[in-house]
Image (tube, rainbow, N blue to C red):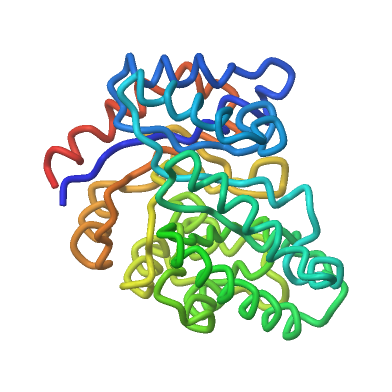
Length: 303
């Protein structure tokens, strides 16, 4: 299946852009001018925050804007970070996390998103208030329920692993979707996160665990059949603010996409429509967006 290309709107909204974000309307217009196929929506301030767009008419206006510029929605990254992580006592109380998930699922439906992104929220090296085994079981149970309600409404649930969040070892990344054990729960595979988790072994609790010098490729292979979406971006083997992966522009890092993309296409069983570029936290994301598209276009044509 030929892949469509999108980019995450959050790259122009927080981090280096926090004090001067690019308005969502301008992002959509620019991506349309650059002939992207879609946009991946950051559903948090200052872009499409769920509380700023409470009515269906508000959300229809966003859909109309995206459609006007010839784009589709490739996915939705919701704001779960402003709330307790799914492993915490507070998230369990009165089913708070599950209710929050359903609210964001409705936003995904209203905006026409085929998927919704989650993560474990709890910092990789922070105690969530319970033993890690309990945290694992809580997350697995909650996410299985979330995957089911998302499936009931035709939206794919995606977990994005990162070195900055709990359960970031290769074995965690491989085993968590097996534990959730739901066909509507898949992994969002970001190439720079894969490098930092599986090759570098950043921010892991206890004994470091890696998959060797080709960790990105080996992790992708071991997740065969479990990957529901790809974020493509380079890695320079560093962390941003000692927290999560640096999303380096293509060519500024160490990743060999001539080796990675054939494995993604031929050996992972990925049959989704989209590849998404992620320039999260890059200080000049707006300026390198066109170059990122130019870098990936030959791969899309070749495969």
